Length: 463
Image 1: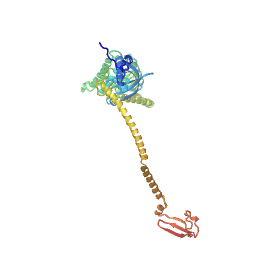
Image 2: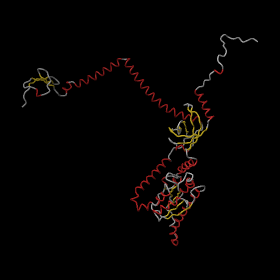
Image 3: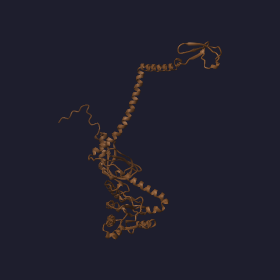
Image 4: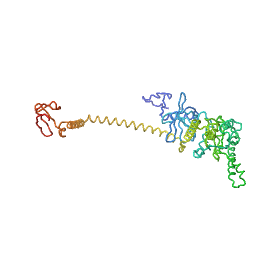
């Protein structure tokens, strides 16, 4: 077998396979990094503080999640149905769940958010916000359906625990401010499993009690006049639903939908006073009046009678409480306002296209401003070069300037003054212009120049 003939230029392999470089494009490297991140990390939970939050007209939300030493770019697309998206704001601490990936257009890694939890607030707070939005959309919180309380109530229904601190606070305030007020107690549990059902049933029971009294009072049978008069005394002017303070779990019965709908369906005005001043429940939003505490509710109910005696002394505190309630109501109404989710799209590439479009929009604006400045400099340079290349243009400009100066000089010359009816008088011998009549001598020869011609004269004394 003959050996292969080697050329004098065939030197064999100059470099070993290990020394051969593998060159990647930027896109290839970015795609590799993205694949590694999505495979090795994927979906994660991460906590931090929101900063640089901005909402686009497309409905997407971009922000940075940071802690003491690092930061992470995040994007929440409009297709994600997240109730808490309206609560996001700079400085808000959150717990996010999402997919770690790379936004290839910028070559930066980011978190595509799938779920949001306000940090320190668990599933109960999420359920609270969902029910709140649902009932608000149905109109249960509408301000126009809220009824005013009677100024001088005679009889009220009380829904609370018979052994709690709330009933003691209410009775103490009522005895001090309006001891003649009658209270009909509908006892129920205000905490724990089944409490919400008992609260709702107590509200309905008091309504049935009051409505039955109204029906008996309207009886047309004259022989039942005494019974109608007795029934009239059972009519309720309002219902107070209350309990003392506690944790979110303790107050949760007043955040149940059954209680909210029982308050909404009540024919009798309802006052809600649950927890402390900082506590807000669904019952507070549905009720006709929300009081900060049980004691505050009792003060509101007895305000008419009490104010009729001590109106002057209590007027400042009444105004402060009324202003605080108005601000709370306005603040809550404002917080209920927000946009709705934009239309959905399942493709991930379309989401990235939206993000790229937002970047291109910002870049286009910057490019237009830069191009406008560059064109202005180019035009200035061309004008200067043009003038230097064609001296006739500069000469023409100088001639025009000279003509303007000539016109100004003519307008200020003596001929123009003479043409308006003025004259110039000089000494006939010396030609010196005379400006002071006291310096003219008797018999001195004068020459007066007019617009047309000159006049000779002699100075004489004035009579």
